[in-house]
Length: 249
Image (cartoon, rainbow, N blue to C red; front, top):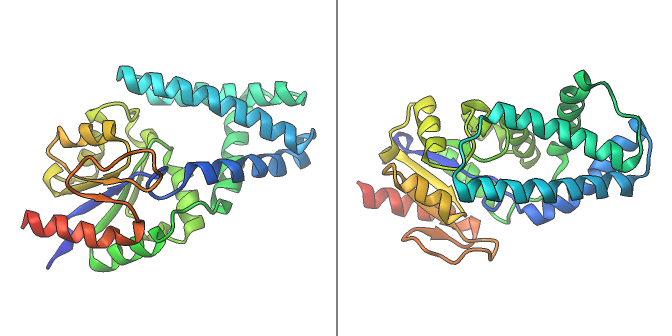
């Protein structure tokens, strides 16, 4: 069977990586990265980042619930400015020049993301198996593309993916079906030949509205299986993908 005609689009947090484990590791690495350069205490940088992320998550949930259209580049530039200013103020470190914000953010993320080890059991082997079977693999995540590359490099599966779709590549937040529409257009993939692997039912509904195939990831305990195809252990993902494809044939 020729699986190469199907494209798999995997979400990251809640599908490939455990956000709770990642968050714990991230807090430590933030301190390890910033203290030698800007001073302060490691726990202060960790607390500052945690407090900021909690606020951002609340705001993002509101954007999703309202399906609010936001220019992503503007949003992310504001995110970086707030991240830098809130953390430096919390720690009491000297604030860098504003034209240095993007460089500081990117260098920090590129240093930290490849060192995170938060993937769900079985997901790395499943990604490699799906690639070997001939499926085309992409990400479809709310994280920016180059951060996704860092996490997947740390997992040892970066080379399995053809592109790393985050909102920065399509300038669209993951808040409605336009997110998937733009990804499919850019990847030259028909929705009926796409398989979205996602944990959040709201995002699954967006994908389904385009006629896309979906597999719900139910590996964190946050969501109950609500769709015909779902996975509760990521080691079983290739088997479930093949079942879905066989049904489409």
